[in-house]
Length: 102
Image 1 (cartoon, rainbow, N blue to C red):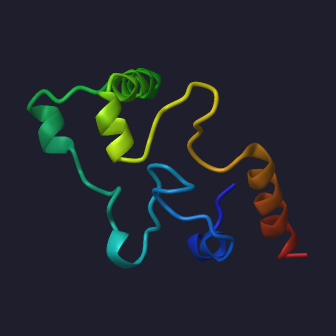
Image 2: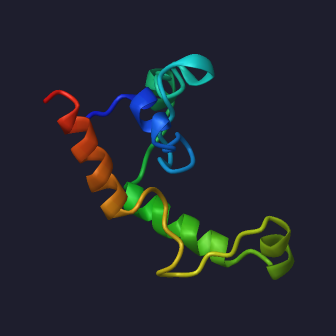
């Protein structure tokens, strides 16, 4: 379900925080995810499955030196850290979104 960015912000759900990778298509972030990669693809750019990127990013975070983790105020804990909103919060916001139209 598509939900308006302002509606999400009113419920304290923001791009790049509670909504990883998503940024609202307005204001300073307008067009952020609309970059054409045609030229790069013609030059040989390849992509890989998002699952691989996520797995490798988590492994990379886990490999940070403890002092770096501490200085950034972050430590990845498998099963504890999660990106985005909880499933319960998502369901709540979607119910509000669908209810607004009556």
